[in-house]
Amino acid sequence: MKSLHAQQHPLADTGYQLTVLNQAEAEGAQLPAFATRLREAGLLPLRPTSISVMQINVGKMCNQTCRHCHVDAGPDRTEIMTRETMQLCLDALAQTDISVVDLTGGAPEMNPDFRWLVEQISALGRQTIVRCNLTIIVANPKYHDLPEFFARHQVRVVSSLPHFSAGRTDAQRGTGVFERSIRALRMLNAVGYGVEGSNLALDLVYNPAGAFLPGSQLGLERDFKQRLLREHGVVFNNLLTITNLPVSRFLDYLLESGNYTGYMEKLIAAYNPVAAANVMCRTTLSIGWDGQLYDCDFNQMLDLLVEARAPQHIRDFDLGALTQRAIVINQHCYGCTAGAGSSCGGTTV
Image (tube, rainbow, N blue to C red; front, side, top):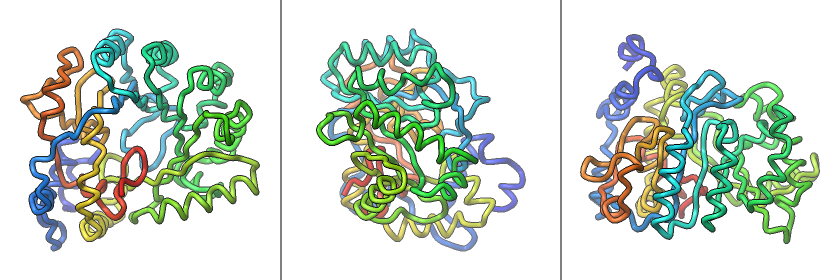
């Protein structure tokens, strides 16, 4: 393990990441294959139950460089979805009754065609989710009107906030991020987001700062609501807990800190077959910035395209074929099936 890590930085090549994830023996510990667990539960091959969410990564450019970002996003990333590819996504969407479009990045708002895309999704009568990092709202005057734009199109805003304290948030996301996040949350609250009766949904996302699983979603939500209201006058709707998957920067952290095997053992020990039956890849189609198709956002970052028998690019979209596909799995999938489960919508059990 250590010799492999010395030879190649895990962020440099997803093939290396898969070598680590596939390794049956790591520092003397046996890690059973995820496929074995699915077979035991009668879930192999894993297939979609339906496709109700189209998740689109519109680019990897971001105004932040967070420690555990599985996208490896940052200001220096140049991958960006073109309007032509966005139109292919819209054409595919129009053929279906998919009800939700989930826009991710990077900071999706930094794509120059972001607002046009939201307007087009709204015109099709579909719900838009935007994965907003909050600080983008206050980063530059050209983004200051985002809360009003979101409200006008009834966008559901889902934002990461690692903790209700400045120290723990800044440790994961950078100095000053907590203070800027609070400013952005107040701007969202001012137009009605998170306010009871407004129908403008504002959800926060919590993921642990280290090599451990998140606590109770309901318990954390209660704590976040009490502290943010009392100390900052901020309100929101729901807290979503997400387990860190051993991908990209978080995998790098696990390897460098010597926590990889121990963390994988925690995920495996917490494996829940009910969570496995409810994984988000069974209802979600993930689209990369270049239009390629994946089973989930994590597979996208590992360059694991949907199975070869299914369409590989949004230009060849075929809902029937994609609904019948076998979902591509690997060891990182233990992260979505541990404990109460994990998805972009929080726990699944």
